[in-house]
Length: 429
Image (cartoon, rainbow, N blue to C red; front, side):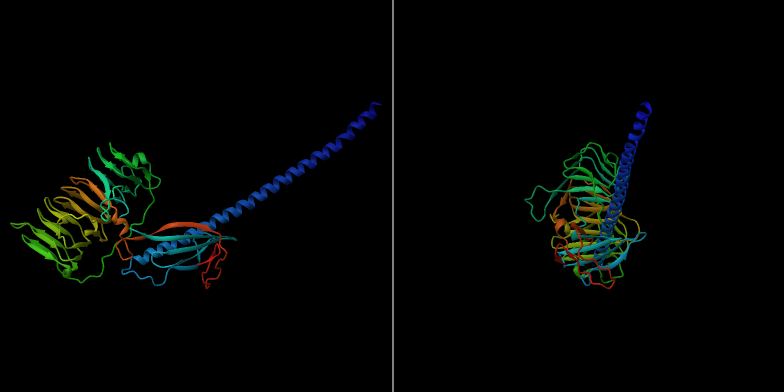
């Protein structure tokens, strides 16, 4: 009887073992299937991401080419940028892109491919003024104690609620220094990735907006327009010299000296454009004065040095900051030491120059510099109109992406000789 019971116990264990084996096999197959599907999904997802990155790379290439076109003045639309099957370095990714439209409504369409994955992106682009910020530097920005930064609109002087920002493209320590009593009626920004507590040195300032990290913006070089070569300098020693549009041209230097009386250079009679290949020197009490019936653009390859009591300014400072424009166009390091006896109105675009600005009163306009120190006796007022007044033939403007979105590509140009005629969301471009 005991042997029979033992035999029955052994026999009943076999089905249990078989069931356990089947369950374990099912679990193993399930886990293997899950892992395999996960790997397939991950591979597809990675290929999709790589394809999207390739499409974005194509968009960046097209945007770069459009900005290169802007460097040639006068601007000519001509053939808009396009490319088929551009292989990206060190990868299996390729992209194709095309710019369509016309001034005011350019659209970039870009396709990316990685393996079998394809992605498409589109972007509308528009012009941005180099004076989109009140003050922008590549490195340091220093404001003296008690300075107020606010805004106005020379196109509508009744507008009071002006949005503005000041900042640096640097992430280094003390990139922006706000001394005691400084008031910024807007935002303060530094480079992406910066530590706000160290990059912005706040010694008791009031910032009504936000302190944040901002996007890096393009600061394109400026080239002086074609002008007649005068092969001489402009000098005034103890006398007054008048320049009109008939004198527009390339000069070796501007040299104003005091000889009993201060040397004065008057700009009169319309739009005056000067390209100075050397330095601009103003001796004590000497002046460059833009009369009420004129505007002045100076493209300077050298330094601007203003002695005590000297001045570069408008006759009666108007609200329009574009009346006086100074551009740094040198190939080596430059220094702009700009002074004004009273209020100063104008713009300075010198992304590779150190700029110091002194004035006996308030300043109206906008500054772009490598390093900037504000030493004026008054406050800084940003002219909002500088944001809107830009065309393709203006200096230092550049294209930026206004709107970006991704869309599934219904067509991808696989042939290098193919015409790029993508169809996205049912719309032929």
